[in-house]
Image (tube, rainbow, N blue to C red):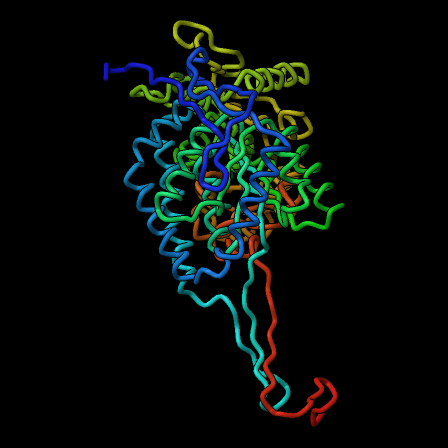
Length: 501
């Protein structure tokens, strides 16, 4: 192969019951750093393909749910090791398809490896309970049961990690899956499922349908053969998913938006806080649901922090994430690029000052992709749109706070509650913040990004509907409890009646 040659576009079909299934219509996945480069030509599915995938999942369900838990765990452990073996290959594909820099793409794949290893262990862990009965010669216990067919709908920003959060525990619990990935990252999704089947997952346990949200994703949500839906995406779409599932009485898990903030108190280690704000705000070009889009700074250190932060952001290097030395990659597509720029216009109109960035980057090779200059807003009030709404791009608003209590109030003052952080050397302040910050994830002296798979992930308020992924809660989303009573007394015993009380 010629060095630096552009790989030929992949030809991707739906993957249903272990076989490729085409569609008469197609769409393309493009490299956001070089938008003329087609990564994949992809089958564009709808109701017909979703129906086939659901039928395949239902056919595979009886055999898979009877497969012993330890055997399921062995398959997932093999999948994790195959992901580890292919880590560099998958990371490079990810950078080409969604744009994050290569080191971050490796981290994305590593998160899936970690999740596979973690969930595999559930095959031999206790996950039920036995409890005393109030009656003699009676046994009382619980077990977990699969839900059935689960629809997993995932976003483009973590195209292997987030599918692993959903699909690994879903199949571990004995469910079968219809997987609808984001249209921006179909190649990463297909590579992930290929790994699962190479590890020994039977055909039909995980089925992939590609397509647009309104044509394909909506069909997955509404299909009567889908028993539960796990969705990660925007608040607007999440509302529609919740309404549909509510009407149909389906179980639904929603992981939606965030407007995450770092609180920097006057006693903070400013160098550490600067490191955290830079990584939290501009990692993955700000395209994370946990990205730091607000930094709330106590006034005594506001000027020093803001000046140093703007200098550091100005030194970030935009470019293709496969290139050495690049620290910020492109925005995923033209629509998102325009969205990010619209918030800059809104910020200016409301009186914010642009210290760095604030424009589309068009010089040199950057003109080939969807690049936005890393942006810092100053003179931001908590009520501005840029301080309230999720931008999902490389933009951070610096918000002054008169004191520590006000800073906590500003941090809590949005419709979201995913990830919040505080930088302080005061132990008492830190512990008060752990209690008072309204978020599903709280960091002390660390940025708002960097969740680990062994703790539950999710948020409060409009960040979702309260479900958690990963950690000790990983199986809760994809299983239901069954209570079992075994009476071996040989006579009728009546609970709450035939007792000595």
